[in-house]
Image (cartoon, rainbow, N blue to C red; front, side, top):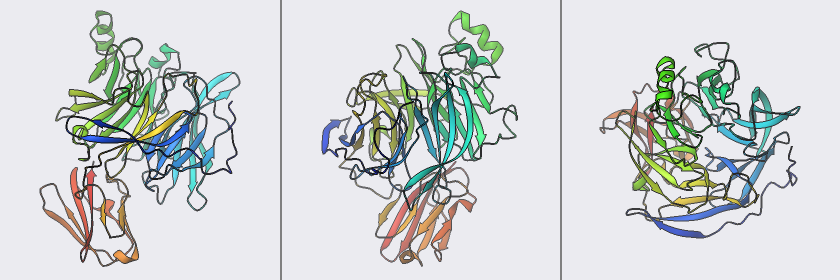
Length: 462
């Protein structure tokens, strides 16, 4: 167990906030790359929070909020029972979708149980008045872990289920064993109970046959995409399906070897939609739909560790296949562990040094990628002197528009993708539950207008 090197009473780090590090030209767009925070110890998860801060886990047990404008790091909690060895430690994190009213934070980490490494899923409560996290509930523990192959990416789906990935924990056969939690995608309710519609209502198992899934993202088309480490061949991008088998260890990549085909046929193995040999070591995934960086718009962005770059993957209209890919930022930031984006289209990446074993701790950083020439045109939350806010652009039943009193009396207008006006609502309260509107799947524009002031939001109904 690795103790925290300093007191949590020190809430703000003194890490340097750098100026523009370099400019990189893509096809036509020249972007700035700026180190906003350095001197951190393997940031494994970075999320864009509803408070316009980056929420970050560091592998040795620290969770922080990072101000993207100043680089100030505010430590929220240090988990002292985290075991950080090899590639294990404090790993995945996700915030409750309705975080303003339900400030829950879910994290996954490895710990020591006797002499064995195990994984735990923990729910934390956030207190905004003190800017601290406190332990609330252990949702699941005793998951087999190891120094590598722990998976541990978390995702909350629109139906309010928690998905999280586990690796094979260096026990390959366990990935095919339905009684083992290793090498799986697991699913539970947000309170830790098991959903009745799981393949086995008495088990969190959702899919099996995974080696080490470290990327998971929900696309606006409703599909969930996974990035998975292969052995010496066949790193993969997969689509997640209920109760399906992804082949490991009997299958690597597609079912193209004669020795794999019988297993694939008898077990209904899901084949990847993209794969790489030699391997590239894929980490996280992000769906980027912002016009700020046109070369990346409407692409699935995949960060890589071994290849030290970002892959942009173009999907088919159905989303069932990858029809094109490009590579960007080759070795610009060393190994790239994670990625997130804000409402203005800026991209943030977390670096992971030159190798996997962290032989140079507290040398990692968060880098901002931005297009200084981009002028917002109403995409995703442009505010023009009107104090209203919608957190996130993906609608859920709890999605709300929050307004200050100065915005009361504004007209709230909702348009579909064809420009047809669907709603015309007078804002009379500071909270408007827009998630209660019955909307078909698609893209919508929400405009809030009061006099010459307005705010524009792009919303997606899954």
